[in-house]
Image (cartoon, rainbow, N blue to C red; front, side):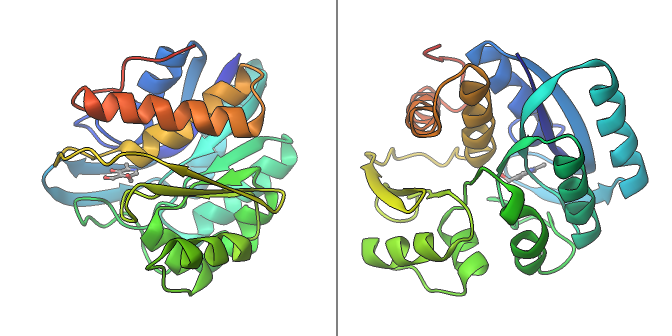
Amino acid sequence: MIVMSIAGVDPSGGAGVLTDIKSFQAIGVYGTGVVTALTAQNPYKFFSTLPIAPEYIEKQIDSVMDSYEVKYIKTGMLYSPEIIKLVSKKVEEYDLKAVVDPVMVATSGGDLTKEDLASALNKYLLPKAILTTPNISEAEKLTGFEIKTKEDAIKASENIICNNIITGGHLDGINTINIDGEITIEKQELIKTDNLHGTGCNLSAAIAAYLAKNNDLKTSILKSLDYVYEGIKNGNYGTLIAKI
Ligand code: PXL
């Protein structure tokens, strides 16, 4: 079971490709990582971004695919519409099952995107994704709806163009799951902490890993919510305790 993260690098290891690989490892799948951008940051401060040329991202994907059989991937920070288009092309070319974390703004407020990415995600990548995992503000950007209540989240969820989970860290712990139009509300207790950097990355990585281990989509989502929750409870350092 080989999975791939296509995402940015956070050198402090809490978000992006580095933490995705830790989650893959914790759940028991072999992780590969394609880098879309370097960042200079730590959990508290974001300094800058250096995007990788789309042609070189393509080369990375091709070189992994040349020797490994990868079915499930997760995408994180894609930075620009050009990179989104490229990733969408490769998803189609290799028939990849993509869990898309529609990263737009870092928890620390950093520059993770060049411009408005919501329309490029909606146009190019989400139509080919098996799942997207927006938080509340990303779901608002994808749909144009304001989300203040559970009912708002359900309405937004029904207007995202692929299966989705709208995570509820900023909605009282109410996670809204929509698989093939069927809504499931999964409420989690909120943990008081200021260390949430990279939790979204770990959620989508875990879902790709559980899918690669032959869990169905709903089971993969529920196991991953549990995995990230346990990680946060334990200090969110690499979310190391996985129920395989
Ligand atoms: O959590 C969003 C995210 C994704 N990818 C990278 C990041 C962050 C947040 O900081 O740094 C590389």
